[in-house]
Length: 132
Image (cartoon, rainbow, N blue to C red; front, side):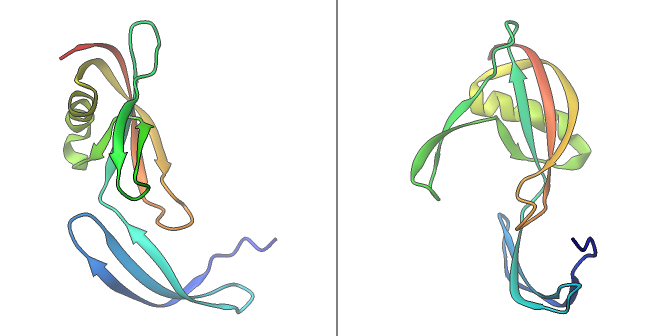
């Protein structure tokens, strides 16, 4: 297995708005294979909150997602400004689950879809919650 990265020959933005950016790249693999177009979806920074109550039960929120036309169970989440990630993480729990987290702690980061966007999402752990 070759561990070298692809080379990007060209890159241009197909769409940019406040919710999403779509980028079209022309890439070349280490073996010389041209992969074009390769689309990359870029999102704003965001946070997921792993919220546990005083009995270590995981808090999930039920939300409608138009892309699948379904209601899904998800972690509380939202767009963030990195300068105030903790306040926005707490706000995501309040907004999505009508609960107030007791303690927030950074729990790392994960990549949403490394194959298509590579956008990191902050993970926060919230413990001890109360109804808002």
